[in-house]
Length: 409
Image 1 (cartoon, one colour):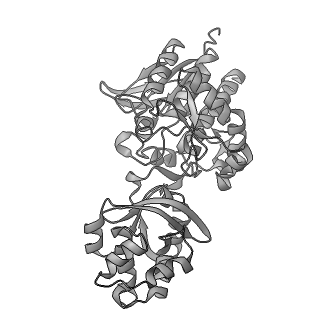
Image 2: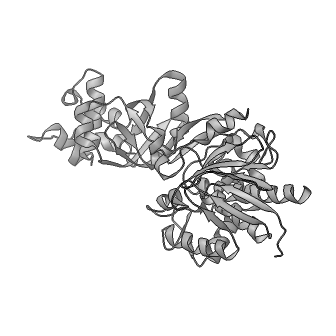
Image 3: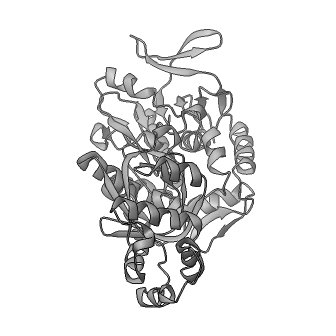
C-alpha cells in the first residue's frame, strides 16, 4: 500500500504491539516498535514453552463471556479479529494449527518461536523498524516520547502512539508494570495490578510442604464459591498452583481480599461415588497402615493422603481414628486454607490496568492520539487461549483507532 507519510510509535513488542504494527504497516504507515528488552516477544516465547495456546474453538458468545465484566468493552475488538481470523493469520505465517480435546487451539509446532520468527520476517518486509533496549519514561514538556537508551535519553515524535507494555507478571521478561506511575503522573486512573491465573500461599504445615513440594495432585475436583474445576494442581514450597487453581484464581483472590482467607475445597476422588468409596475402605486392612490402606483401597497418591492428614490434624482427630464413613467425607471435602495469592511476578497474567472509562475506544481521553492495547487494559481472562486472543484483538483494534486518528488529523 502507498506510503501515507504518517508515523506511529508502538511501545512494547509483545503480541498486542506486534499485531498493531502489522495492521498499521499494512496500511502504509511508518511504524517503529520500541522495546526495553534486547529482543521482542519474550513473554510470548515463554507462553509457548508448554504448548502455545493461541485461542479457543468454542462459539463466540461463550468465548466472549469469559471476559466477565470487560466483555462489552472487548466485544467489538474480538468480533473484528475473532478466533477464526487469528487461526487464519497463524496459518498464513506457515504455522498449521489443530484443535485439542479441550477445544483449545494450538500451532502444530506447539511452540511460539517458529511463529515469532516468521512474523518478524513479515513485519520487516512491511518496513516495520525495531528499537531494542529503549525503556519508555513518559513524555517531555513538548509531548514527545522519552526513552532511556544505551546511548542516553532519546525523544521521539510520532503522529500517534500505541502503548502495549503488558501487565506486571514475569517482570524479568519485560512486563514489569513500570508504566503505572507514568500514566498516574498524567492524571490517568489505573486499577491496581494484581496476580491473575496464579497460585496461592496456603496454611499447610512446613512438614507437608517440604515433603510434597513439586508433587502433582492429579484428577481432583477443586471448588470454591459454587464453581468447580476438575484437573491437576501442584504443591509448591508455600502452597498450591496449577491449571485447575488458575481457573478459580479470580474469585479466590477477591475472597481473600475481602475476608483475609479462603477455603479451597478439594474432592480427591471425583470419579467415584461416596458409597463405593466407603465400601472399599470398609474392607479389613489387616496389618496395613492407614496410609497404605488409603493408597490401595481409595487409590490415593501420597500427596493426597498427606492432605488428609493435614485436614484431620486441623480438626483434632488423627487420621487413624477415623472410620470409613468419616474418611470418605474427608476425601470428598478436603479444605485447604488459602491466605494470599502467590507473588504477581510468578503469575501467568495480571488483572487491573487502564479502566475502559479512561478510554474512547482504545484511545486515552486525556492523551489524544495515545492508544492502549493488550494486558495494560483492565480486564481479566482465564487461560485457554483467551489471554492471547485479547492481546491480538486489542492490538489490531488500537491500530485501527490510530489509523483513523492520523487520517483525521
